Length: 463
Image (cartoon, one colour):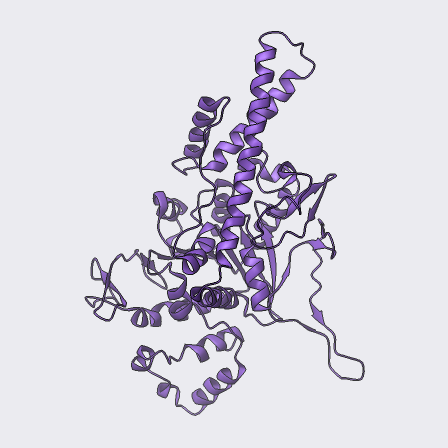
């Protein structure tokens, strides 16, 4: 599915393969500007890349990623999706847990419940029983409830351990030593740099993620992107409510010139916590848990119950709990302002508390939302599009072709660099009336297109 620029309706394609093995996209119906029987990526690029390049240079710019980013990189490296965290049966109160998990998932429009729905329900039951059983004598029915409560707490610990091990396994898959690894990491770095390549005088890119893994941190290190994430310190960084944006470069003594902002800097917020965050005596600290570690025990001796990787109640109440209140305040503050653009990749719109903020953002006429995704799970993306009643403020690139990380990086996303030489060349050609002699569509087929100059020009804010 495709909707960009001034398109009024969503254009749907049938995905096929050419004789050379390249993706071919056949429109299911003819529409203005798309009257050919089939298209290839380099032909659609001229409609998509300039539009995204313009949006990427908005005054305020944010990226929201979900599980789809880890899935894409992991699949590139290993050829399969990460095993992740699966649904389970609980030895106590399983019937109640399954029923409530299903109900809560349907309320937010997620469809089938996921393991987190089950875990949150189990945690609520355990908390309620702890309050109910406090100070009660060892007689029926309290005695049986105490036994069931203990069993449930053990099951919750096992479920959290399975979640932790699943995330670590996903990270380990990304670092697998095989021939596909370098190409996958190249795509990850290029993907992140396409968003982070903004001049220092512009408002910083703000990256949000619902994932517990550290893939973005890993990719940012490879790309040389500096992340500002509210944590202060070196050995055991402490989460602070204050936002210190220390990213100025000062010239050495004796060299003239004013201080300037660094390039390649982004703010970073993990909306659902992280695998390396712990509750340390009512303070949030980040521990030195290696990316893709074999296990968590040597690094988190207090046990998994101290990890801040899941909301302790329904996700819709995250804003009432620390540190989630600060994280979601950052999310709303970054999005809900004029001239703001949000790009989502791999986020399936299954969290209503996040969707609500995005809907609020779209009530501001100068904002725009771009949805990039591999598929439309449970029709949640198109449902959000239709319910928002703001079609002119939403662009869509959905499906196996548009959601493929390689296709996005190689064809559709802006150039992942601030290339001043290309900018100057484009300006000189325009000044001399030679802009029509820039590379044409035939050159794009040979992958030597003109979008480098075009993208770089947008990156510098050139008219």
